[in-house]
Every structure is written in structure tokens, then in C-alpha cells.
Amino acid sequence: PLSAHWEGASPLYDTLVCVFSCVPNLDTRVAAMRAGWLARLRRMGVPHVVVVGDGDGRIEGDVVHLDAPDDYEGLPQKTLATIRWVRDNTSFGHLLKIDDDCFLDPAEFFESLSYRKYDYYGRILTRRPGQLDRAWHCLKARSERGRTELDKSPEPSTYCDGGSGYALSRAAMDAALEAAESPEGRHLLQVSFMEDKLLGDLLALRGIKPAEEDYRISILRRTHPGAVPVSLWVNGFHASRAAPVKLVHLDTHQGQAEALDRLDRDELKPKKVWPSFSPVRLGYQSNALEHVGPLDRLDAAREAEVAVVACMRNEMFMLPHFLEHYRRLGVGAFLIADNLSDDGTLEYLLEQEDVALFSVDTDYRKSHYGVAWQQALLSNFRYGRWTVVADADEFLVWRPDARGSLPDLLRGEAFAGADAVRVFMLDLYPEGRLEDADFRSGDPFAEAGWCEREPFLTGWPGRGPFSNMGTWTSALRHRLIPGSRPDLFVAQKIALLRYNSWMRLSAGLHFLADVRLAQRELLFAHFKYTADFRRKAQAEVARRQHFNDAEEYRKYLSLVSEGRSVIHDPAVSVRWTACGFVRERFQ
Image 1 (spheres, helix red, strand yellow):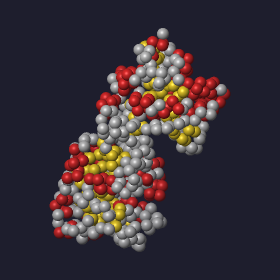
Image 2 (cartoon, rainbow, N blue to C red):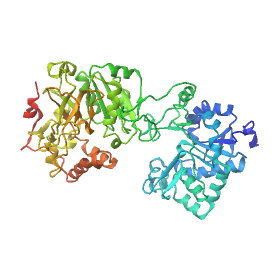
Image 3 (cartoon, rainbow, N blue to C red):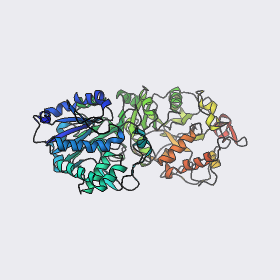
Image 4 (cartoon, rainbow, N blue to C red):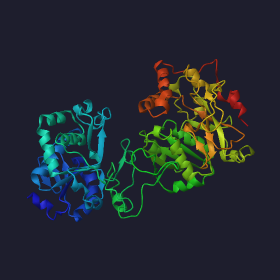
């Protein structure tokens, strides 16, 4: 009899935990859970079942083989089948649905008894009109319907996130099943691919709303298959005695053992830093930088005579060249904030022993265009030490061979007593087509070593926020996009500095207040115009995270649509080492 499976169940909790899985995951994800938090769950007197599909209703051990689909697009049907099975075959007053890539702290979740106050309990999501990603399921689907049809469920909608678990009372189970049999419910089932939203929509038909009292969780996600999971959407700490977190979405089974071991420790992990000018907080859009990788790399980054601070997203095209260039200049360490790359950038950086790596899930446009993250790294690890703040396509130069020792240079008389150095962004480009500048030779300067004869304009009178500094703009970009506002394409940065707390950093570091500039000015060889230009422009227009709704990238795409893949012009283009402005800064 089924009752034998819940013998000894605690009447205090009166709950059956339903782990959603599939047959291929039984030997991996489910095995890791059985060796981890499910063992603690049993000791508390809370029974569980593992739910898989493509079955006949039989139960083998703790696995229930439901007569329901076992694929991603079949989750709505599988969810209703699970609810029906619990209602018809058990007498539990509640069920807790949890995915097989989650870690639950059984004591934290059940001993609060918060879930027993409500019919529908979990992390609340609200989708206003236009917010729902109606193609979310397509890449995960296996059937033709799942791959080609969009979710057409209604908005607005409020429901509990299925990825981070939810609890239902028996009243909610009855209401969901009853609503599913109604004409409105049948229609919802036909147009819905997201099981959590479907359940919320069905319960809404019966007036049941979600609650999330003290439902503290943390969510990790992989940005691509095989990626390292990082915080996303709910940026928090893992469950421990120092962090009363009920659930952690791991997005993999590989962290289950570590999560269980951490549960009895007084520690906060993963380690995080924040910009020093803003409140420290967790959660969504918090500008929290989460440390990834060995902690001893942070010590090396603190002690390096000269280091690089950078923000990156999907920079595998330039990244190997970037690291090689700065290592050749004598840079001792890199502090890099990765903004949810999905091209392998984060994983590549994690392999580099001189890189101290952080992940940040906040929107780029809500970070003062990366300056908040740069300031967080500078203030926490590079206070008072020379640091280059550079993008992946910005290579610091001061000699025609693009080499030299940066530590030796900064010890020179021209930089004595200075807080910072003005660096001009010299836009470089190839003589031929952009798509041919793929840098396979390993030498970006050889493949894209041309610039404007007069590379900078000084006609805009702006002096920068709080800084009273001069302003140079890019002559190339004004040539490419004629008629642009004169204040666009600012082409200098105060990007080599010894950070101090009184400094005021502008967006893009184009201006910096309360500093003593060095007598000498340096250059960034700026490799924006390469074989990767079209991809990056398209990506940034779609993301809409750059200045003024990615205004500059939108204009670039108009150039691409005109078929302009050659921007070299014999009338105005010269080798970068022959440019007068550049040669004046060679010594």
C-alpha cells in the first residue's frame, strides 16, 4: 500500500515533497539529492517522491512514474498529473514542488511553518503586458510544436516561480484541478508552455493568489550549456547558519554536496563586493559583484604594482589578445567583472591564474555603464595603486612598438605626484574589409593599424561633470556618422589612476573630478572596427543597455545595412604610428 511509503511522516508539517525530474536525471541529479538534503528531510519526518513521466502510475522506491510527458514542453501536463496523483493517492494537506537542480534547507523551510499559512506559497513573479518571454521554451523543447509555437498565455499574470519551488495546500490542489477542467482552463492548457505560469493562471480563475512571506532564496543560473552557474535575478548567499536561505537554485547537481556541507557553517558565500557609494543589498539589480574562483587571486590583485580593472560581456574575440598585451606591458594582475557572458568568456577567465574574477547580474545601463562595477573593484582592491581601467578592445600604448614596461613608465618623473593619466582613445581600423580583420595572426596592430590623420575633434565646449576638463571626440566616428551631435563619441578617458575615495568618476570614465593629472598623456589603441563589429553592434542594439538606448550602435547598424565594410579612406587614413597626434605622445 502507498501508505507504507509515508509511515512516520510528521503531522506537524503534513507535507509531501515532490521532486520534479526525468528518467535521464535519476542517476545524476536525483542521486546527488538523495545523498544530500533529502536525507535530512527524512530525518525530519517529511516524506518525498521523485516525479518522472512516460510511465503508468507505478511507484518504485521513491520514484513515481506518471502517465504524463517527460520533456520540457510537457511540464504543464506533468504538473497537473502530479497534483492529481498527490490528491488522489495521499492525504497530505500540502505538497512542495521542487526541481531536481535545487538545494533545500529542510529545517529553514519547514520549521518556520510559513507555507502552512497560505494555499499558494513561493517566489512571486509578476508579468505585465509585454514582459513575458514567449519563446523561453523553444530552445529547450524537443517536439516540433515546442520548438515552433510561442506561449500565448494571458498577461498580466502573477504566479510563483517554478524554478525556485512552491507549495500548494489541498484546497489549492482541488482548485487547480477543477479550474483545469473548465472551458477557460482547457484553453489555458492549450496555449501555455510554462507550467508555473499555467498553475498561477488556473488558481487565479478560482481567486487564489500567491504569497511569499519570508521566502528567502538564492538563484544561480548557467548562461549556456556547460557554463559555471552564477547569481541571476535573485542575487544572494548560499544557505548556511549565517544566511537563513530556504532554497538555492543550483542549476546543476554538482553543487549538492558542497551546499549540504555549507549548511552547518557560519559563513557567507559566495563572497561579494559592492560599489562603495551605494547601499549594500541583495536581490535583483543590486550591483553586487560575486567572486568566482580561488580567493588567493584577490591577494595577488591587491599587491600587484600595476593591475587592470575591466568589465566584460562576450569578449572571446578580443580577450586572448587583451590579456597577452597587458601581460607584455608588465601588468601583474587583472580584476574583471563579467556581466553574464554566454560565449565562454567567464569560463576562459576562470582558467587564467592572474585573473581575479567576479560575476555581476545587474543590467549594464543600471551601473552607470559599468563605472559602478569598476569603482567597486578599485575601492575594494586597488586603493591608492596604479590601475588601468580598460575595455577588452582598449590596448594601452605609448611607444610605436606597443611594448614597454608600464611599472617602469609610471615610476618616471612625468607621473610623480599624479593621481591619474589622460588616455586618448585612438580608433583603429583595417585597410581592407572589417570582416577580414579577424586577428588570427595574433597581431591586432598589423591587421587593423590605421587611423585618421587628424584623429580627434575639439569643437565641443563641454568640460565634463564637476571636472572642468577639456573634451576630445572621435573624428572617425563623426566621419562615419555625419550630422551626429557634437557631444557624441567622447574619445578620452581618465583610465589610468591611483584610486582614492574623493574621486568623482563620470560614466565611461571620460572625466574624473578632484585629481591631479600627469604631465604626460597616453593612448588606447581602440580596436572597435574588426571582424566582430557587426555581431557586437547587433547584440548591443538588441540588449539596449548602452548610452541613450544604444544610440551609437543603432547608427552603426545603419552603416552595416549600407554594406560599408571598408572604412579606410586613402585621403584621410594613415598608419597609426605615422599620425602626428600619436607621434607627439611617443617618447
